[in-house]
Amino acid sequence: MSNTRNIATGRQKAPVGAYVLMSVVGVVLATAFGAAAALFREESEALTFGVFAATMLGPCLSLSWFVLVSRYTVSPDRHAEENVESRWITNATSGACTDTYAACGIALSAVVVTGLDISGSAALGGVLVLMLVDTAVRYLVEKRRSC
Image 1: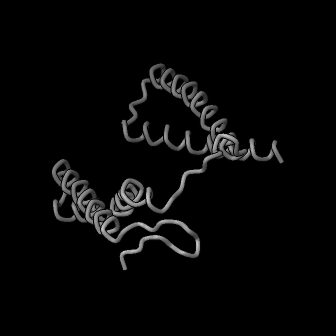
Image 2 (image 1 turned 90 degrees about the horizontal axis):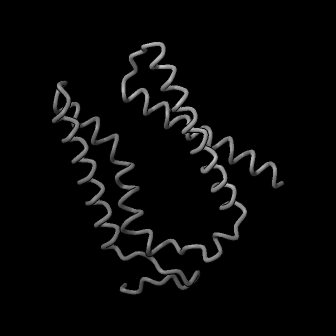
């Protein structure tokens, strides 16, 4: 069957080759993450490789689907700028970005004054969690205001 158009919906399906390429690219990316982790960590290389490669497989497959398959299966919304949800997420993310700048400045001042020693991964994780929670709260507030 060389026909890649779905007759019922009129939407185009992705060719089988795109899914195969997506799978190969996703597995190769996850393998590269596992190899990099095994190279930089001093624990058991095989265990580190396996854990990191398995953990990164889902995100890598998702990324490769987005890059290689989504152009066939997802049609962009022509009126996205007119959607209320688009306005909500834009307002939420821009407000969260401003809040994160302020929070990072305050946290940096507190760390310098108190002399605390915080690891980079803990600090970056905290910033990421702050942005996610702040965006979610702001989105829900925007949604509630509109309803």
